[in-house]
Image (cartoon, rainbow, N blue to C red; front, side, top):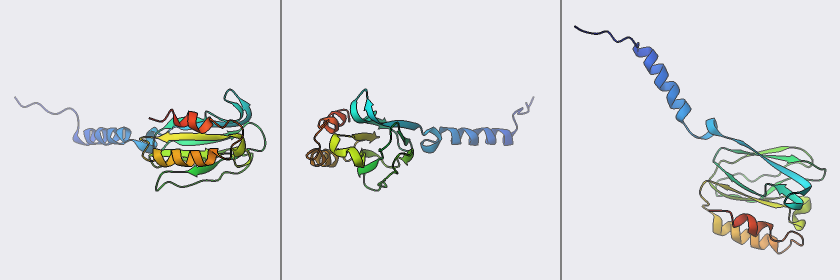
Length: 155
């Protein structure tokens, strides 16, 4: 005796198609990662908290000022990634679209060591990031070790 398929083909195709979309990486699984910009934090004076971020391609850094006078600007981004310069005293979003290491700073407080590092996927440009961090650290007079401590967490 021949049995009839009780699951219509159209319904099966729709279910499989929906499964394909939910399994796709990237934007569907992207996260917002808050990075606080403050005069004082658990990481010391003039800091991004956290100062080291491990993220995935597609994630968004949400820079949030807790005090007046802070902004964010990229110092180094992976090849093909967009550099950024955020406004003062306003939240700013940066979508991380390329794998690698990103270095950033508060323009007003860079000399005070208000710097940070984001690792997105594999650290494809780690050597360039270390060179740039060493170069930038030469002009830092407070919290001089922030770049090196953050870069020590990259793997």
